Amino acid sequence: MSPRLILSAALLALVSCNSIYYAAWEKLGYEKRDLLKSAVKKARGEQKKAGEQFQDALTQLKKLTNYNGGSLESAYNRFKGEYESCEARATAVRGRIREVDTVARDLFREWEKEIRQYENASLAADSRRKLADTRARFEPLSSSLHAAESTMDPVLRQFRDQVLYLKHNLNAAAIGSLRGKADDIQGDIQHLLEQMNRSIAEADRFIQTL
Image (cartoon, rainbow, N blue to C red; front, side):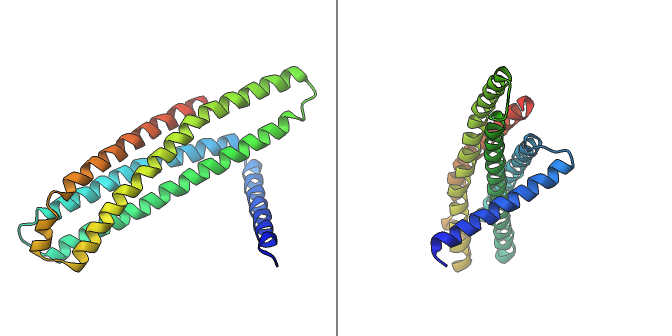
């Protein structure tokens, strides 16, 4: 089978899965609008948890770089564990944002299709205006979600570097050489939290008007 046919088959399977998913929820009384609101709430919640987790990881890094006795191995493992939790939270945030994007896209496509089914031109025009308004309100939310998502990677890369460096050089001298790094990362985390808070605020505004 050619790559194009394989891709086409995969896309058809994905569309079919989405259709089954939406049909199942519709039987329970939930339309795509309800699912979008739910997806936005979940994305908002994951962002809050991620922000808290990144703060916890920074706290452990500060404790490690201010080491003044005790088990270096234990301190390193605690920081490594916090970093791995950050990775998991970041993955969860990305997944929730993809869910928001998918449900919004499918909602807007369905809405457009159903507008063409109106017999009454006035009702069709009103529905078209409401679709345009909903899209316009969704745009800043989508932009904010993706902007917040992009702030996680720089922090994760810095955390990853610290974990790898300490893995290869776990001694007091190596710890000493990393002093001050936590302060550098603090700025990136502050930017991350500010962007996430803006995204959370956008999510709240969108949910209230949907």
